Structure formats: C-alpha cells, structure tokens
Image (cartoon, rainbow, N blue to C red; front, side, top):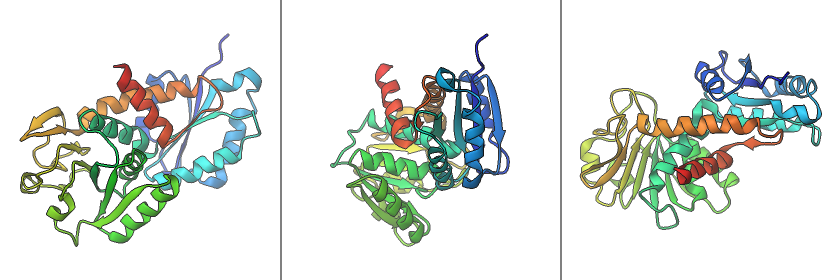
Length: 291
C-alpha cells in the first residue's frame, strides 16, 4: 500500500489558510495537517512528529509548508524548521507566506518577458513593505535591477532595504516614501512599475502613468476595485496600453497557480528541498521557459 503524501501546514495566523490547503490538495497532497498560530517555539515538535514517523526512503512522503500573512514571521518558522533537522533526517519545506514567493515569482517572470532585467533596469515597487512586495524587491534585486522600494512610511521601506541587502549581496535598493515624494519623481526614468499594495487601494492614477515617459511595463497585483494602477484590468495579460505592456492580478495569478502547484509537487520528490524566494523564482523561470 502506497504511503499518503502528508503535508504539514504551519501558519503564523490563527486560522490556517484555506487557499493554501485547496492548492495543496489540487497539487497532489493526500493529507493535510493544519496548524494555526504557530510560533518558532512550536516548530521543532511539529517537524519531529512529521519526520520521526517516516524514516529512510519514506521521508519524502511527508513535507511542510509555511503560510500566514507576515513573511518575516514565516522566515522565522523556516529557520526553526531547518534547526529541527538531524543531518539526512529531514523533510522538504516551502515558505509562501500570503503567497509572497509564488506571486512575486510570477510577477517578475511576467515582467521579464518584455523587459531585460539587469543593471540598466530601473524598477519601482509600490506597497513594497508587504509580504509580496518584499519578495518582488528581492527577486528584482537578485537580477541586478535598480529598485525603488516605495511605502507610505519611509522607515518601513528602509527596514525592507536592510533585509534585502542582507539576503542579496550587491543589491541596489533605495527606500522611497509615497507620502513625501511626488509620483512623478518616483516614476522618473523608471522602466518597470509593480503595484503590490493592499487590496482596493489605488497607488497610481492615469495622470501619473501618462507622465511616465520611460515606463515600458506595468503590473498591478490588486484584483479588488479600485485598481492599484488606474486603467489596468485584473484580466489584462500583456496588453499594450499607450505603448506600455500591462498585466493585471488575474493574469499574473494564472502563472502564480502553476508555480504554486509545481512547488508543492517538488516537495514530495525528495526529503531535502528548501523552497524559498530564490528557489521558487528559479522554478517560475523554468516553467516560463518550458511553455
């Protein structure tokens, strides 16, 4: 009798994510063990309960995913999970707090289809202090882009820049305030803008876009009216609007779902996978190249 694929869902929020659970089941997980309100102190016992019941070549039939609304809290759980392993006695783990890694990977991959990402690219990330925004900044910085990290509070943007420079050597990230800075200045010379703000919050209007002469690609990851970027519909997929390639949240979401399901499947291929921002971004690029 084949062993069931068991996925331990460790969520930092009180209620484990229904979204993550549905995607995991659709991706082939046979049984979910859902835990909410998980703290770093809880992780060791949860991971040990998962891996000590299945030794040797059975370990890859069990894996863990970390969710919740706060990616920084999720990173703490991931670190605790790594510390719970004993050499080869371990299980694969995926971090995707609030869909941060899978959504960010999909967004950056979509942008890369139309714009070479590298030292010559200037990118503006709006709402950059949220879980998805932080991961978008990290992935763009890894590609060598010059990234403007924009938030209503400059101190929050500065904190994100500090974390990104610690994770990505040589990262070129600059904190910017959307409260104290004119939108024209934020967009000046920018080639790419990705809006990752809260649902239903408009971050750029049509006048802002009209005056952004160098802008080539715009992505809005908000699917709830009003749009994060005025004029971009959730279903827009590589739509040319006034000379700019535009993507809406649902169009990006299609690729995000493919990446999310592929990552879940990878967890059960071996017992030693750690899927965080870099690994999930690489997976997104592979899926895009294979299309």
